[in-house]
Length: 289
Ligand SMILES: N[C@@H](CCC[C@H](N)C(=O)O)C(=O)O
Image 1: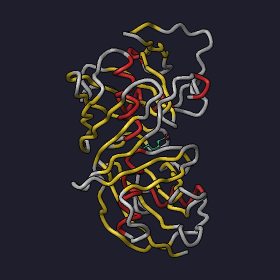
Image 2 (image 1 turned 180 degrees about the vertical axis):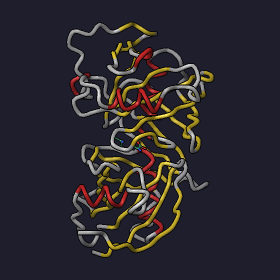
Image 3 (image 1 turned 90 degrees about the vertical axis):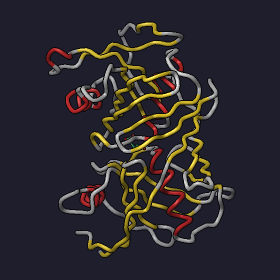
């Protein structure tokens, strides 16, 4: 099957974007995995499938598949690329676009400088909803909130980490580290991602606080490994930092692929994420059946 695709990136988190507004492609998990493969396919952290409006007042729907082929709920950098895609392809000329994801409706706004602001919805702290199994674990109070001690089998002398746990529509665990450059992201990331207390696995963030308005962040993403940036991870880290008393309400997040600005007014309020989105190239490819 030959398909058209657009390759995009937001702060270095890269995507294959597919237009399914006229007809569904009905790709299998194996075909998503193949498209994301950097040696045999196109190469991407996630695949975004843009679909028609599911209901009045909502402009589009879109589905997100991780590089491992699994469908997920939310993707911050992908949301910014999605809005650029629908505008550049002439699917809409609106500056503010509403899109249905698997579990929420997002509102996205193009800024005059080409960046995009996304209303990412309110963070969720209810542990079963993350989902996180805290049975028998005692949280450690930090600031006005708490961190959870996790033991990591097989992590040698780094056998325990403390993480803040929350959902941005998808699950996140955030650990504070002294220096993201020396943090053991490639070792600890997979152990946290697959930890038994996260029944749907988790995205693992490693946050270095630079000041009350700036952090550095690396994220080991569920289903994709370490990426150059993770939008929902940036939101989760800033919300965690605010609740732990470490950050102010507007924070620049320095990732390895660029800067995202995150704002959160507090409990029950949506998180706003602003950052870049860029088209890299377009093409056609034969996808193996
Ligand atoms: N890169 C994304 C997050 C993509 C989904 C994530 N890996 C998950 O499994 O939840 C972002 O920018 O938020």
